[in-house]
Image (cartoon, rainbow, N blue to C red; front, top):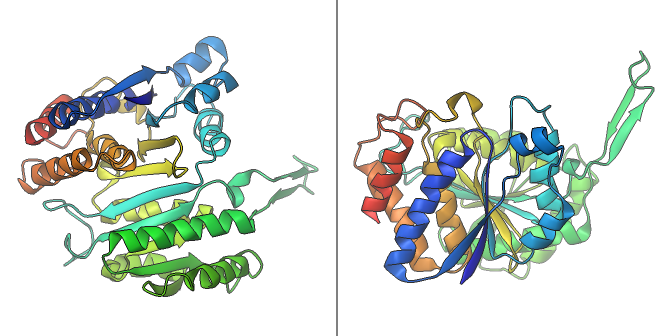
Length: 350
């Protein structure tokens, strides 16, 4: 019996989550695994009503779960940063979800802006360090608001944090058994201290994986090759900031935010799965949003829970639905179907 915390969140989050849970129930019925969901209303509406973002008591409850399923965070009436830092980053840091996992896969029947590239060319994974780097929040202001103002934001890289991320990436590359190639994306020619550590750890850990091809690419070159030759990549491992940037590019080359899902992972412990799109408040309640990214997040969650058959069912259902050509555009309001209709299509394919 899996215990899954469900945080529908803001904007379109509840609508997307509803379709994801519909698919979760369908594959559970087919494969026989049992689960229960515990809903939490953390988000903009609760904050505006109570002033509460995410209490420590909720984190204690999350630690007893098997997984967390998140819809979206962001409210037009709440100042940017309050919910993102108070919910998303707080969960990531407090639960030590040190891996952000982003599959970048072009499904059959999905348009990509890259000319002459197809599903066989765009199929790689980005492993992003998720709890250190520039996101650690170390820094501050001096003489704020004056002409002499100084703003400092420090990049924090620990040997432990880098090594566990790199090791996870090597293991994933071996498990994928695809190109068996791991690329370190860095900027070691400029960030000579932080990324010297990344390069040394990558080389040292890499000695334990003689079957894996090791490659290096500066982050600016990585963005170039992701567009020109995405087929070169199998798995990319990178720091927090660079991972944030290149995965948004990855979302675009795989067809847009409407198909992009991610996992925030602490291997062997409770981990969180979500679509990477925002809350899109202008579409709230319209039943026009494409829920496929949220459904793919359910597939990632099932794979993490080792419900392999169910995870494959979800992935195949998404793939077959898109390959059918019925959904012409993954953009909100342009799919030709309502949110619930797309969810129903996936359920029928399961």
